[in-house]
View (cartoon, rainbow, N blue to C red):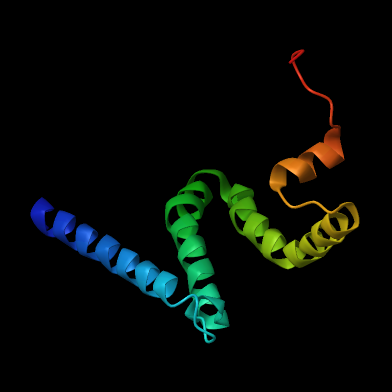
Length: 117
């Protein structure tokens, strides 16, 4: 396949992705938000898992056997356990009136300055 076809197809694909992202971003103020659709979320996870499957697990399985399993187990555990972690983070933020990530980290790991500033 000629490289010009591959480059053109790549730019068209990226353009389509940016067009979809722009469309969703401009409609985010409407009541029926496309980005909150569970099908869109599932498709985005599928893209992530598909790229890892193609580039990661196939090569690793061919060279080292069962060492490819963390490529599947990591994202699976994150998607399964994230809701529990998120609920705990929200509870901590409400109890301590935390509004930013920096405040959250400071509340969990100490509020003293580092380096003598």
